[in-house]
Amino acid sequence: MSGNVFKWANSDDNDSSTSSTAVSLTPNFILPVERRPNLAEVSKSGDSVPIIDMGRGDIDGLIKEIAKASEEYGLFLIINHGVTEELCESMLSAVTDLFHLPPQVKARLVSDDPTKDVRFCNHFRKAEDKGDQKAKKFSMWSEVFKHSWHPADDSFAELLPSDPPNYRRVVTAYAKEIGFVMSLLLNLISQGLGLEGDVLQDRLGKNPLFRAQANYYPPCSNPDLTLGWDVHTDRDALTVVLPTSNMEGLQIMKDNKWIVVDPVPNALIVNIGDQLQVLSNGKYKSVLHRVVTNEHHSRVSLAMFYGPDKDALIGPMENLIDNQHPQLY
Ligand SMILES: O=C(O)CCC(=O)C(=O)O
Ligand SMILES: [Fe+2]
Image (cartoon, rainbow, N blue to C red; front, top):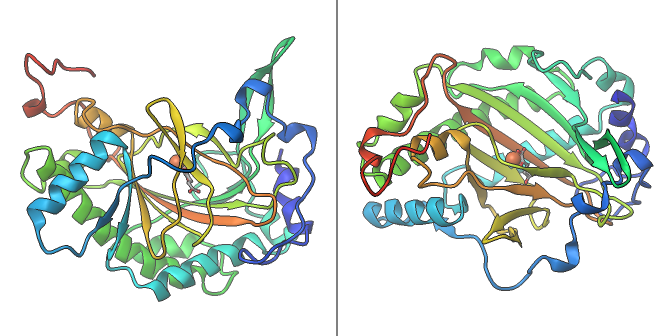
């Protein structure tokens, strides 16, 4: 499996924004017919995800807008979020540099061991192929780099590779900003559920699980046959994703249809995760999403996850359970 991780490094793709040669698909990336993305059926026009201006002065309006988006979509974009364009750009270029490290440097950090805090891997899914009852492994058309992060304690960065030279420094600065954005979002989401602002964060515990995942999706010769990220929900409470600007890739399921998350300059993507779905007694949706590939361009993204403390007991908030809304979890 780990051999795949180095495949892209040997391609001509060395710039996330310019056109480059697509790497050919080998059979392990070709999904069974029923798991393929069916791109012709994805609606481009019509429904689009809410774009929320975090800088709007009216807090009550902002709380309502976030509550509505969390209920109807489980995903929204935020603009005027306070993280500077310059920092976002430095973060994306540090992520791009990371995936373009020489194969022999990356090899030291490749691992399938989920208990390893810092590692590169290539995700795969198990699926049955038609006429073949034995589940096969299908690799995702992406490479990921996982590590922990913290908004206040910079020591996580000491575990990160010192190459590329600026990754540690940039991700530490970015983590502080995203920590602030996530606290604000959790506060507003809490209020949108009719609770005091700090209730959700208190429920998630004193030592939340902060995981980060950088994703790299190289150009792909046939986007109809594979996916960069298979259909999934995020298992944490909240995710904030910084994607390559001006590049489509992410899609979400809404009313049983896939819709494209259109890129918006300087926006961050906010996702409701499984833990918030449970805490909200199903009111907010942990959104089903997937990432499709592009024939000509690569895309990177950095997902920052906020999950519960390992000792936190997660169940629906008491004020959200009544006769009309029986406890779902
Ligand atoms: O690349 C993206 O836009 C989303 C990635 C994602 O869903 C994840 O890392 O969980
Ligand atoms: Fe995700």
